[in-house]
Length: 281
Image (cartoon, rainbow, N blue to C red; front, side, top):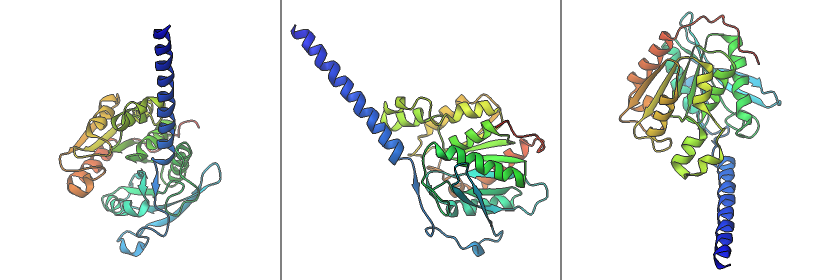
């Protein structure tokens, strides 16, 4: 009788522990993923750029209006990079990178997720998938030769767009194969409560396009080992750029020449017909 009581109490404790862990994982996904900076925070003066960005606006399927900057390259036949930025700041922090790519022959549309910058709404995990597709559809009307760039938390949304649309290639910067993998890296075993969420590697494999994975060895946000799990999981043509010096999403700051050369060379090597029809919606 005593043993049965102990087993029952242990079972109750285990159930309570699992329930608390599950609730904590939900809290983290709701409150710990997005750190937006709303306008007027940021450097919004477009006159500071030698290639001035064009203000663009487009509307998600639920009516939320999104805002972005379009940096047009003066080079004829330039592809258009759709830049899906990470979970902090807004487009003004990515604008210098966009300008540099435009100078090097790659136009860029960098846009703010809902709740960021001048975009309306509130950032929510599932809603950003629609934002990514909306941004892609807008970009493809400007130039159907699309390169998709995913920075950190922006990578699973970039991968989702690549899976559901068409792109020349994908650039994945400082990211992870799935929320399960990065969640367990920080809060083991909480990642197991999100086994099907943000499946960057799976969706890139479904897209079956060339992928350049970039990661810094000093990354303390998405550990380097997690980034290598993403790279190892990819089945399509892939390349890897590793920085010994850079932390999270910092390669362009620590090794700018190597960064821009590697990305532009990869984009050029992945050249494909820009006339391919979009994947079915």
